[in-house]
Amino acid sequence: MERSSGQTLRPPSVSVVIATYNRARLLKETIDSVFTQTFQDFELIVVDDGSTDDTEKVLKSYGDRLRHFREENRGPSAARNLGVCHATAGWISIQDSDDICAPNHLKTLYGFVEKNPDCGMVFANGSYLDDPGPKGKTIIPREKSKRLVEKGVELTDLFSTSIVRLQAALLSKKAFLAVGGLDEDLRIAMDLDLAFRFFTRFPVAYLDEVVFFYRRHEGNIGRNQELRLLENLRVIDKLVQDFPSAENILGREQIDRRKAYRYYRLAKSRWKAGEKDGARNALRQAVFLRPLFLKYRLYQLLGTIF
Image (tube, rainbow, N blue to C red; front, side, top):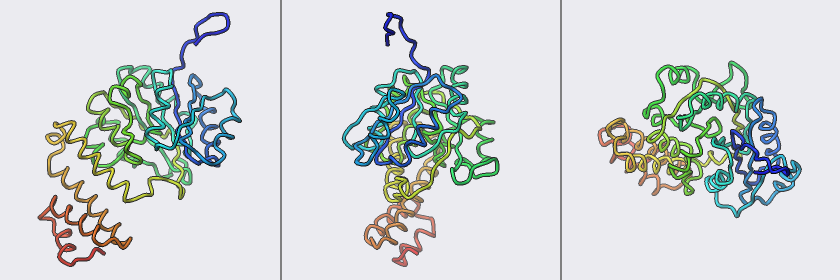
């Protein structure tokens, strides 16, 4: 970047990337929460993933305070990857277009990587927009959050529960590109998949701080239960295939138990939707993975899933 006098501008410390699709009514509040950060050494990049509402109008209202790009609808992972490609900073903050950054978000996360530049990713906790405050529910339960700080992040922590939310993370751009960016075939479980790939190649740290607020609403893509479960199963298989040591670290039993439970939940979801053949197929997979688990066997024998 150049000044008119020929002086070179230093790139910002952080590039904030927001991918959005048809969320014009929520987007402004998200963007404003970025601009009101206590840490101001950042650029904001917004990628419009083919919106058909007033998203473009909202983005143009900010003038040159942000850069925005538009592409045909390819999904959130592809839009975020595009945003990272245009980022000029060495550290990337990926935000959802319906959530809110806490004022200390960037200061907290960048303050850590500034002292620990070899870290590939640092992530923190989040709270719920409709349940804020010191006694409100957090994304990662408070006791677990404290334990993560005390003992450090282990593969078992990432595997047992999907604790990493990209909205709460700061990523090294170099590391992000080295692991291949976000899997563009994933629409929900991309956070977990990326966390696995970062963990297997770079140091990952955790901070016991709330740095964003999650907005619960009917438009959350994560409410698609079938897609969430299928993607979760795919991500587990990717981890074991791409990182063979995972089986030694986690144990075959833990891997099969998690996969079986997801197949069982998939069976219940399909049964409720009236997709009985699909439900039985999913339950068959759960029984295959845990043949001695009586609950799954019983449902299979009864031919029904309550």
